[in-house]
Image (cartoon, rainbow, N blue to C red; front, side):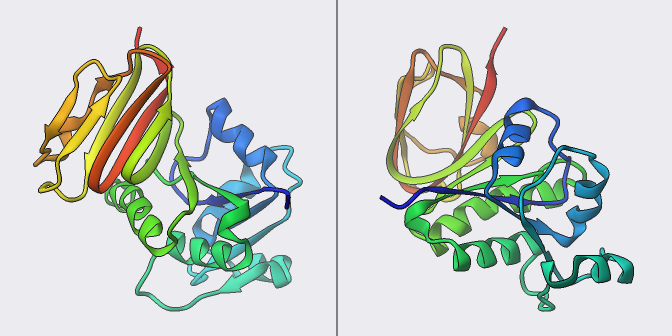
Length: 219
């Protein structure tokens, strides 16, 4: 069996400080860095030895940055998509979906419009790359996207929030403190702030969901 690769896409929101996303960064086989995140990566002074490229339209890099990066710098000048999308497109072109785990880091924090847009990109990526193994790690928890049925590993009192992109599709859930039995969430907050009861919960829906799970249980 081909060895599974772990590829990190580093965006330009709040740089990781929690142990979980930092471990993902340190353990990555390869990092695809958005050009607007390059300064944070170099300023972090982390013991970082993983190979990487920097991708984007170049508006966040100096000419000296580009010179030092050499062939690690990949210019994508089009403006229809943001740098996160460009980075993911490059990553999925170079690493097969069937043997790769993708992790997005530093996609939240700072400007709220960028945060919302980046989180919703999880649904777009799931649609563009069916079967992709993808998560987004923040300093507080893990975002994933799903459609259909999925069982999640969890722990008692883990906080779970569910956001639907299609409010006409009912949500069914088991293993949560507040059950979802055909619930229609017409606003993003309406299926948020739930709580796991045991070691797993299951969600089922016909539309795309974004699911957030905290690293720590509620006190």
